Image (cartoon, rainbow, N blue to C red; front, top):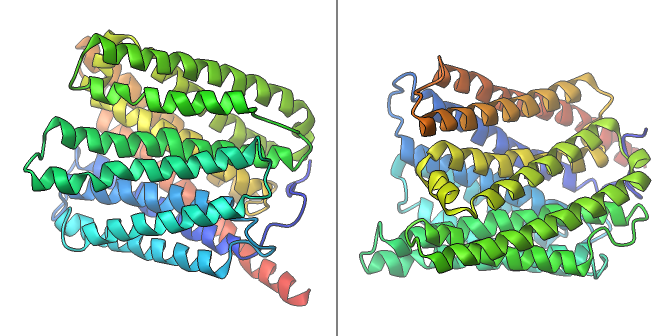
Length: 421
């Protein structure tokens, strides 16, 4: 099997940006380990909530946003993202750095709020650039998925802009306050990130001869279910039978979409299998398993009793978010990097980095859900739970750091080859 499997070499302008986004993941993962260490030792000058804001913003806006936008912009020009798009990515990165240093110090304050707002404005501009850049993608497949992703990203920001009027009317801590936060998160994870990841896989499949990986009906089912399943966030405070019914309908459509997607992937895999390295397929497989588990978990919370359980046990919420962010979307991005040759699957360091990252995700998910189940049953803590959680969580930034070292070592040879050409 080959390690570089695209129809043409990936644009050289993209690779440094991918590793810049990967640096953001490393920082976010390190902060995550610090947050989990707080339960074991007292760390001076560290406050949990402000540091948690820095962790989540860097992970979502610095890693997932920039990396996904980068791949979606790869066909904007023959050399990759245009100069304007690269400048917009730079502004987005500077906003992430501002959030990283301001949130731990002031929480939401005079620096972090403008930085977050700047990132939102830049995301609109990049969304428009993605809309244009994907004009030559398959109209009924990857292009539709990419454009739905952009629309979902824009819709999600309604929840952020709503915070101003909500706080101005002294509604902090109210139902509207929490609904607006959940609105943003829901349409980021179940809209923008989800559809963007599917678009990347579909685009790769299309360039390798699969005429239509996901048809229009499947995409419509995913889209409608994303809107209907927001009812679950409302059910957290308004436990009305009608709200549960809306969520249940959304879950049914989501299961239907998931079944159709699984069948499409299964049929496509036969013709695609020889076109990717074993490690690329492993990352794709793990990502798709993560996506499948995410769908099944959302199906389970269609049962009101399970939904209440999900709300009351924080470990389940954290585990679900990390399953989506790390187990599904991040591994999909790693598979794209392998397919483009930015990680060389035959190199030992790449395999070690991917193995450590995957092991850290799997083990931390097992601990989070296992401990959550014990708390729900009233059986107390696993022996050494917090120490084990810190230990396995540390595998994630270590794996990312190894991948960074491996990837950055490839940059000089790439530039040298370009200069010789």
